[in-house]
Amino acid sequence: ETGVTQSPTHLIKTRGQQVTLRCSSQSGHNTVSWYQQALGQGPQFIFQYYREEENGRGNFPPRFSGLQFPNYSSELNVNALELDDSALYLCASSDPGTSTDTQYFGPGTRLTVL
Amino acid sequence: AQKITQTQPGMFVQEKEAVTLDCTYDTSDPSYGLFWYKQPSSGEMIFLIYQGSYDQQNATEGRYSLNFQKARKSANLVISASQLGDSAMYFCAMRGLSSNTGKLIFGQGTTLQVKP
Image (cartoon, rainbow over all chains, first blue to last red; front, top):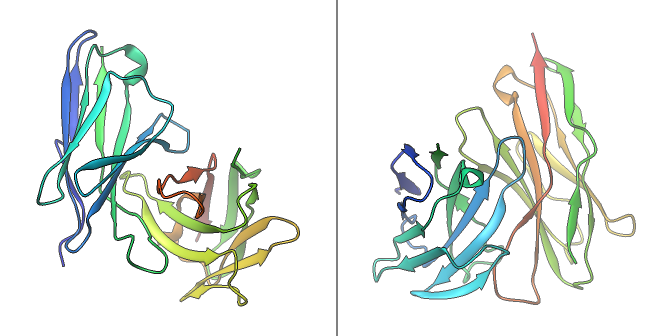
């Protein structure tokens, strides 16, 4: 069973640029959630995708957008990057059909905005 | 509003001893799930254990157990027989089950260091 994978591992961008982060869900999972984790903090929910539709959004501006594809993989896009966007971005997949609907996380993408 | 509080920024434990990591929560949702995750320095968030709000028994998974006290709104993680590999950041998280967003609310985390 393949776990959650994310790419790239690390990324350096400059302020104002745009970035796309990618996530492949665990086999059998149809739901993907994205989180932002600033240094020394707990992860903050960005949004969730279920069967290619957005299914809940956290307190993030519209320049954070996403997609989910028919194979349940997902992208997180961030436009007009700001210095405060520097963080670890975590993707998690889950299966709402299970009793616990546990989210399983990937290794993360560390984004640095200069 | 939902909130998770972890009051211990850092903890030390001797190898082979047990340690308790504290977590209290606040929610108006009558049905919710509580999770603990481990985050090593590599960054990946590793699922450890789950407790549902209506579960009668405290959850256990190997060396991990959850001391769930619903009236006190606490869900402390107990790690028995600590190992050097247990050194990591530990996060308590909650999800309200009344909505379908799947949003996890995380605490600030506790750093655990296991001493040889």
